[in-house]
Image (cartoon, rainbow, N blue to C red; front, side, top):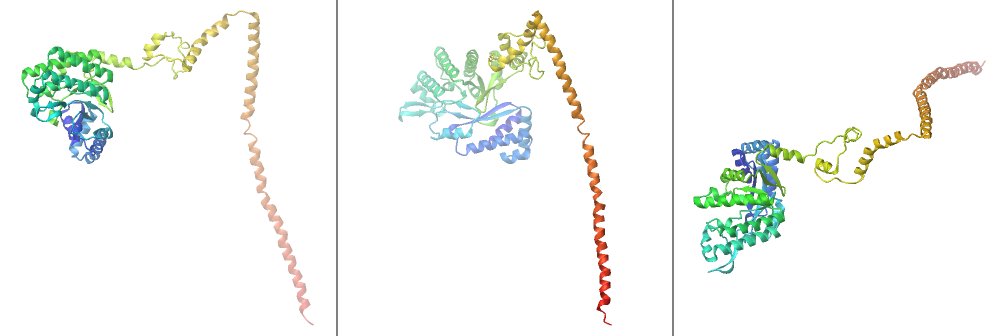
Length: 437
């Protein structure tokens, strides 16, 4: 079923960057294997292997074809996990999360430990559950917010994660603290995110759900204020629909895009392999110039040409210009020493040419004929070396007389036959000796 979440996104064409995550209390030991299977199916779909993707994910080929088309058009998908303090989660749930290797972990709080009027102390209160919303009157809005922010900051500082989810969760039923305290809570959470390098989520579920218009407007104002503060503090922003069904994916994103434009924010974060990648909303001229400035330009006199800047007649750069050009610090070491020697070579030649002593001129004049004498014998030695193949021809001629040895052997064998013929007449002479007269 996880593959179908990406199918619905590809069918609509949005959101182009989508991460699907589940709550930690629903995770089982089968989930890591299922997640790896879906990742393999997505790779096959991106490669164009529709039958392999469909067979791996257990879906129809038509579904795999739509996902493949979406991936080829630039859509990117990730699989994460939302980790909270749900008491229903398994004791070893963190081991399951580690085995999943999620692209991103969302840190959230959904339970507060309170003293229940009937069930006693240390009772886990699901404050955002409509079944238990009446307990706000018992606990108090101010105390509930204080407990919530304290627990959230403690988890941010001590537990792993990449994104902090829906910091306005206690206000889901309209329980807002006074403005002064609310801004203090926002500042405390953002400072904790800065210290740990986490991003903040702009959650849209409250906007597209059935809530009063006044509450929705108050929620939009709070989101806009949070965006501006996050931008000033350098905290990344992620947008989440908190969809519990594929049909709610990307809901109310058009409203958030307007808020982002109003806050002059053109960059969001997207979890990929445990890190936060930055995604531009619009490829503006300023954004393109910023991206190009990060790429190091090709330096003249590189190892491709083999010449330095001084040898090419180019002016030397100062340390500040070199740092700006390379986009970082100038490293001093063996390479820098070699570069300085190459740059200083033309100046040394100029210094030698300025010296006018007569002895140096005579010495230079004497050295010139020596170079010529050395070069001549080298050329003479090269010529006889080229004529070495000539003596190989007589070696072939020597092999020819060896073939003439064949008739000699024939000549030696000839006398043997004659000897045999001579033996024949001896036998004829003995024949008459056997006859008796």
